[in-house]
Image (cartoon, rainbow, N blue to C red; front, side):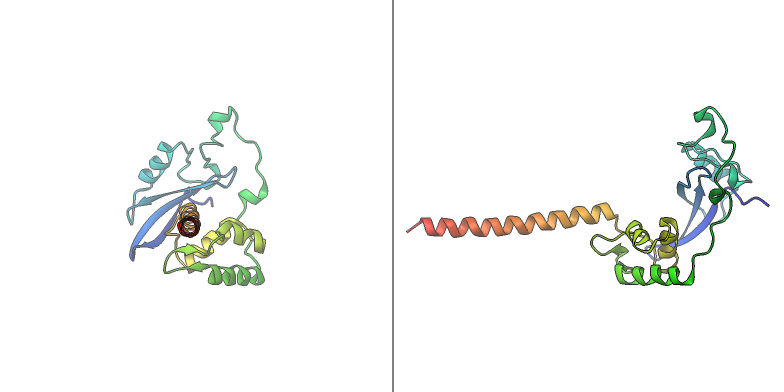
Length: 182
């Protein structure tokens, strides 16, 4: 029996429960999410994704495509797809699951919803050999969602570094100014 076009995901945002619909492209595995009511009508969710350019078959997830892979935009329907996208992903080994979980425990702070400097789901996936989607889902299910955008966190670190450099330069200028005056 085909899987529905989307999955409902429940998360807590600012301590309150929220429901999201997630759709995955059959061709490239890209995904999109939208926040929905607790029990939305399927037509409403499908129309939301269709407005964003997705091709949605409301009853069969194997016929859902992102805007980049949309068959009508490519001119032809895909004939065959890799088996990895049409069959469910295998469950990761217990060893891999432990590695991912340990790295998330060490490098993700659930209270702030942020990773340590330089860490992300993608980096943990590279370090462990797990898929980025698996790492993201594990983090969301076990530790919570990102509340701080990694790019914003990187910008804040850069600003802090620049401010400390500015402070050091200001101290040097003051020191040179004192030496110059008798």
